[in-house]
Image (cartoon, rainbow, N blue to C red; front, side, top):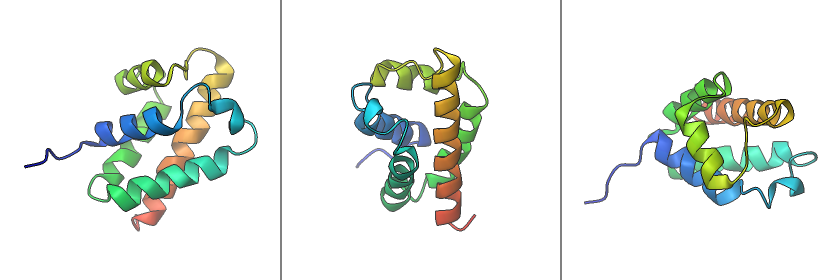
Length: 108
């Protein structure tokens, strides 16, 4: 039997796969919206059972620069999302847009 993925698992996988530090310059200034919308769609399509909780978790992370999952994501992506004001602002924008897109997609 396969273990049920948690919202934390889903977000960690998404960020670890698609938001590595060496790829961020490709989208962080110009393509953030499209990149984030694609992430939201993947989460809804492949993890609909935990997508609403993932959206809630993203909102919680966007309000807390010391959130434990954010620290784990930073380590996995080798990018300090909360390391400076600009990076923190980018993360907040990214997380809130992703959360909103997930919520809309699941009809919330």
